[in-house]
Length: 198
Image (cartoon, rainbow, N blue to C red; front, side, top):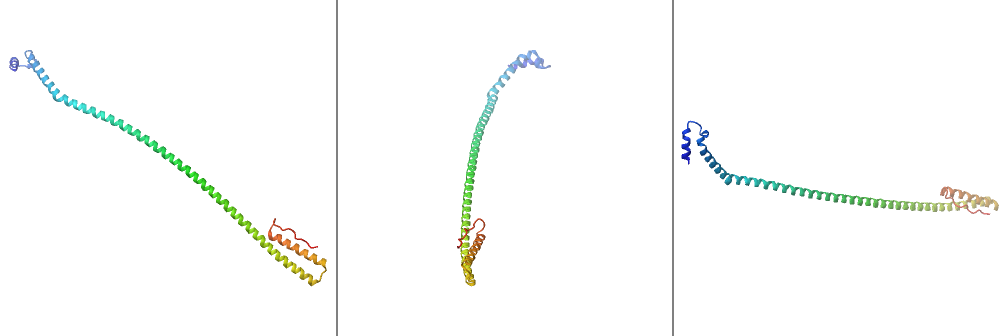
């Protein structure tokens, strides 16, 4: 067949063979053969390679989508875990605050109890000091009364006064002792008036 095509082309060697109608059948024949050969080459080598590339690309895209879905699920899980931990921390902080408030109330109550106890002890000590001072004052008054009685007796013996004058002097001495007693004990703490001799 190439010899026939060459023989058909040879008369038109002076011009372009592709424009020579006598060579068109040969050209179509070889173009069909070339196309079929190229198609066979593509079917055997190019198309499988393209198919592999497309499948690999599809697998990569599918893997990326699956990874994105897993990452989203993991992110949601981590976010939910973070929310749970945050809620637990808030609850723990609230518990610590409640414990601190309770402890502060207990400390305040204990401090008030100790303060009341201290006030009670100080008041008791003060009353004991007052009682002691009163007893001391009474002892001093008794001593002064005894001294006054001795002085009155001495005056009676010295002046040899009659009985009425002696009684008056004794009563005056007792009244003076009562006034000194009131000044020693303080206002509102006065003693009862002593008995007068008749």
